[in-house]
Image 1 (cartoon, rainbow, N blue to C red):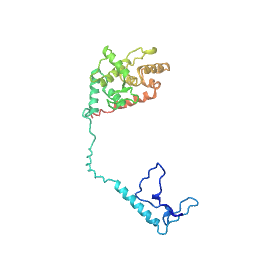
Image 2: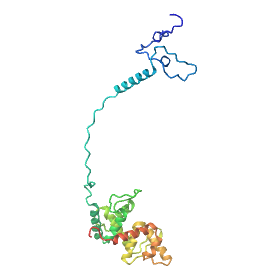
Image 3: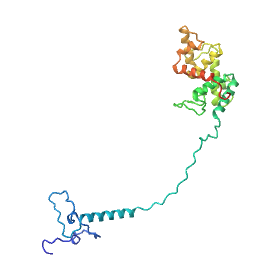
Image 4: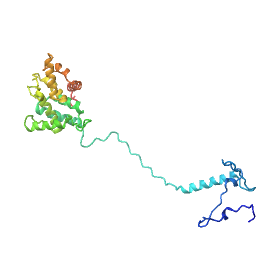
Amino acid sequence: MPAGTARPRAARAAAPGTGVAECGRVVSTLHDVIGAPTPGVSGVTPRPAPHAPEFGHVLRDALGRARGDAAARVSPVAPQPQRPAAEPRAYPRRPAHVPHAKSDLRTAIRRASASVGVDPAVSLGVARAESNFDPRARSSDGLSVGTFQMTHGTAAEMRRKIAAHVVTRPAGTDDVALGVGYLRYLHDLFGRQAHLAHGIATVPVPDAGERRLFAVAAFNAGEGRVAAAQARARATGGDPTHFADVRRFLPPITRAYVGRVAAYAAQPDPDRV
């Protein structure tokens, strides 16, 4: 080959031991194309042949091939059948096992209260304040459950008292009977002098209306705390049998609780209006 003549790229010999793949098409480089932008390398000057292809033609050809390859790779997607939209229900479906749940529950509470001589209005007021008549209610800490939000410890103690005939079991399921039975127990407890833990004793409250307030307070705060408040009222010159003299020694949450239950008990029975 004469000196100064460039050897064609496809004809260059491979190094010993190296295979050369057959080129299907030789693509022009930037230095072989007229009108191509100059690479950002210092000292390199493009020198295309007189009849070299125009840069714009090469670019359009390359873009056309790229679009054709991409289109060939995309398989058509069959249209999916449209599902008919479900018709919205006019109202949420009520579970089959709790039809008219609150009304039925209030009826059960009245029946349980009547069976052991507890004022039904007070029992209903406590149940409303505790769970709003929801037998599935559970406190945030998980310790109080059911319509009357009984703790497991209090429920177990009530079962023992019922088994020992200390408390008469009210009618109905445990969810209702244990709550109403606890109110009956507390009402009786503040009708006599009862010795509790830590040397605390209740002061008998002769008036039945006042005694109901003490029972409701003890349902929330515990009989020991209410008996201690009675003692503090007596020590400061108050009457330990009048709830108005004792309430200021109870926690604020208990004072508010008793007021709420009393307000509920004074309202007309929603099932008998």
